[in-house]
Length: 95
Image 1 (tube, rainbow, N blue to C red):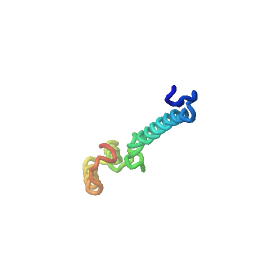
Image 2 (image 1 turned 120 degrees about the horizontal axis):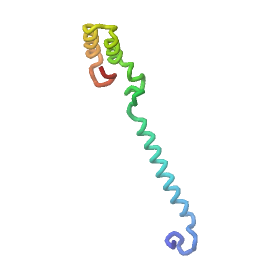
Image 3 (image 1 turned 90 degrees about the vertical axis):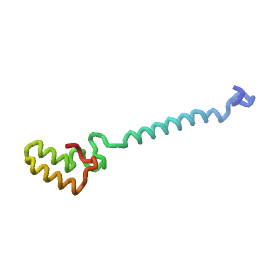
Image 4 (image 1 turned 180 degrees about the horizontal axis):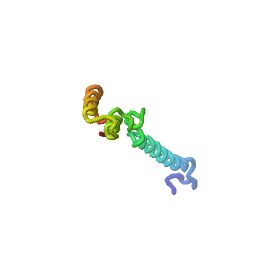
């Protein structure tokens, strides 16, 4: 290995550079994967991260209608109010 040793027989301090480069590459990859893995909501988090996904007004309304607490007329009336107030952006749960 004459290219690193420059004819002296030992690699000198340059031998420490190679493991340092690999440690940096691996640490960067781990940090990148940990950061990107936490983005986006999971089934236990809402998109804004403030409340569980099932607690949105639309989801509560849908559950109340499905359980029979409110009738169809009341459901559509309240849904129209929610649409006017919040708009349908795809957030807040499915009906």
